[in-house]
Image 1 (cartoon, rainbow, N blue to C red):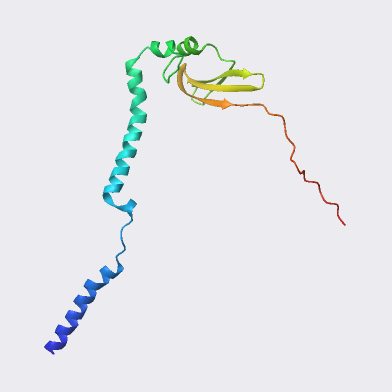
Image 2: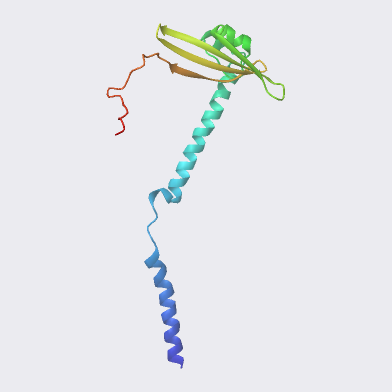
Length: 156
């Protein structure tokens, strides 16, 4: 009886040790801990720079005089500072939130020639610049018809 127990215990012990090595797969490169740490550190550094860099620029020029002299605008400027930097917009759209906050959208048009216009949009909340974007070329092209227009087939 002693031999049977030893043999069963030995077989169970060997099968427990043998099965994980047979089932283990090599860890892919991207799932290795050092690689993931480097990726996460790089992404964190990128986000940190994207958030902190504008704040550093604002601390270096708190009255925005350098930005105004270079005809640039920056979040946090007042409407007067933007007017001094870029001049007046072609269109101002005003709205109010349900909380009563005044919002303005200023649209600047930059005509490169009679058929090409670029737009710049600035957004103000209670007189302070909160964001903006540049549309790029909104070139007006003539409407072109397709080379092989679809014509309906008559029913038989």
